[in-house]
Length: 346
Image (tube, rainbow, N blue to C red; front, side):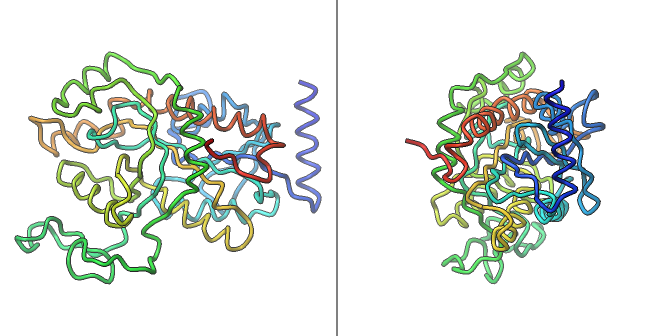
């Protein structure tokens, strides 16, 4: 206890001086259901309680305050959607009370998984993050018969028109492959929570072998869009949209609502010298499938998710912490080794 109070005192002294507080790891969550501790958890609560993020820093220019522990781990909540995420991360990254020059950023939240690739409660390390908002759209009832979708890339005239523009405007973010491979290798053995409810839910996905497995850790690509889309046809669009913007190299696995906003802010912060985009990881865990089960309709399936009643909500929150904390603990415990050079898979 005395050690912790000395740490708080040192933080206060640092905050009052011109020397910024060095941060080792930043945890970026997207929503919290109530208070940061002691009630129904969102994406942030397990991190606050289990990592003892007890020192609070007000961030008037962001969605939520920041919280920090004595090991140099800082966390915050961005708010839902790409706009709040970009603004909140920019506000945090520009705060001169902190030194993020060597910090690792872990974006950790839940999302919808493609049953072709993952099961409920699985953990996905993103290799690419693709923006699903930037583009043109025609209502599906008015698209030409030969079009597979009403979504068209910016500066193009038909869906998936080649070639992909060489100069993009935030549609694609490619993460540090060596760091992602390292995080995946480190966490692949992590045992993720399963439940009878999850087994019952995934049993409905006949014909999807990966969806019927117990939860597991995987690498894949994430689609980020502020519209909560759902259904078989939207899932097909997501797969093709990701494949298009990764020039055939990517595989869509999971979706979320904020990551492209966060990564845009970190890109700008990197240009300004306030953050290192090569030290960013995106972890999404599967709270629900992004489409209906065979024999159901998209609208029927979406109704079951109203107000966040996802079939694997709590297991996905646990998976985000259980998987992400392995990475966070390694970084803080081996800081002398990773401070100047990011780890990579051997």
